[in-house]
Length: 138
Image 1 (cartoon, rainbow, N blue to C red):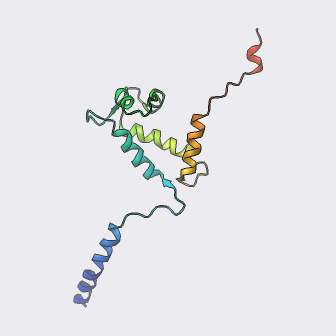
Image 2 (image 1 turned 90 degrees about the vertical axis):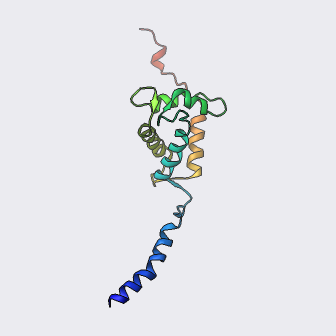
Image 3 (image 1 turned 45 degrees about the vertical axis):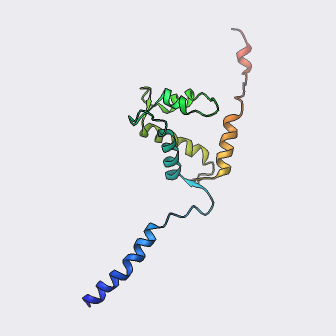
C-alpha cells in the first residue's frame, strides 16, 4: 500500500505543478480585477522612480507625464501625507478609489468600456453652474 501511495504521488505531482505554472485565464467578460489593475498601474507609476528610493517625487512624475499634461492635481490627490513623495501604499490607496469609480456596475471588474467612459468623464469640461442666489447682493 505504501508503494502505491508513493507511486500515486509521483504521478500526480507533475500534473499539479503544470497546472500551477499555467497563467491565470482572463476573466470571461474581458474585465480587469482590482488586483490586476493595482499591479499594473502601481508598477507604471513606480517606473518613474528614477533615483531608486522607492518613492516617486513630483519632479519624477512630471518627467514621466505624456503629451505635456501636468500631473500636479493627480500627484496632490495621491500624496495623502503631503510629504511631496508617493510611496506604494499611497499609490495603491488612490488607485483603489479610482478602480471603484471606474467599476460603475460594482461587479469587481473594469472593462475597456468602463475605462473609456472614465476617460470621457475626465475630459468633459467642468460645468459652471451658477446658483441664482449667488447673483443677489445682500
